[in-house]
Length: 451
Image (cartoon, rainbow, N blue to C red; front, side, top):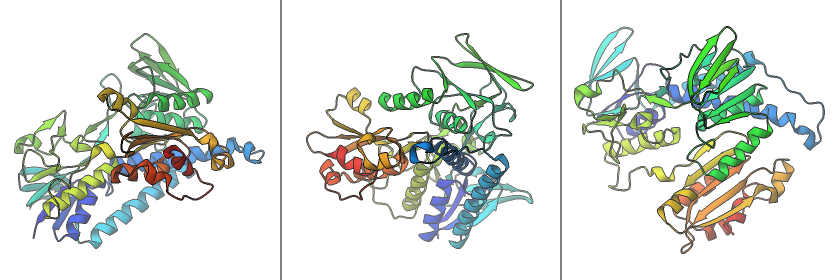
């Protein structure tokens, strides 16, 4: 029987443990914080729950367009905190129950490597050494805090301090205009905070389709968000009930709170990676296409692997590793295709994309066909009183195969699933166009774009 030890109980570790146990492995999982993953249950899930609350408030504020009147919601911070705790507890318990039902042994402690096939776990009761045929490292990541500021959890916040924050900020200064940063802008503006976003480049969401970013920027400006473009924060000083954020171009922003959304760093310290010969780059474990490290018996998945920092990717990596180590893989067909991973940004409007981006195709000199249809043409969008955004499909002009797509608008994160399946399965625009979808729905715009 294959003995598998997993250090880290996030999406990657849970998926790997579940599949490996199902295939007959003896699995031990070591987790020192929360089963389900700190990044997942303490960052991703509560942020989306708070965004859902903010979205409900924003929807009610503009509900006059749907025939309602005198609707003015207010936030109950205590009730929101109770809601977040309840969601976290429920997901943790369901994940733990699933693992235990599959015979996975869960050890509450901190694991480290003693060798290619030996793990030491330190618990409240002492130390235990566990032998393993295979070791999987899935310890996740934590918010990055630069050396030019101190996050006190009161005035200067990281993402972990903000679910929910000690109080709703009067004026929040968000440092970082990537995915996490813009989600916080949307969230706290919906809660009624004045928000300033420091944008280091000339558009929010650097690396995303400029047309997509432009829609979000326009929405932010309409909502009164202050955008400081071409500025990098160099210091944050907290004093009393205020913060002062200074930028490299001399501009200064005064606010009540500041929030850092400038990426994350891998949780690789203390694992003993260097001691056993596991090669790393900038703290991330170097892995091959099978998620195997430089030590053949040791794999890495999730944020620690340095690949796309998405829960869906982590889960898929865990499953693929389980199939590989249990002999269930078909060589060459068991590797994660990161280029086909769908992603979403839970702003308002929502943003989602998958596959090839228009700018990347042009950079490669590849011929593509781009079709775009606005939601303003959709009966369902008009029924929802929310015609913002569009659907864009990128296809091969010779074969009609769907190469990618972007969606900006309501429920984009759900709608992108249709395009994602088309990209993964190699479907054509004709396949999408010939699909008989429900009317009236937003998804119909996908077939319109395919046409």
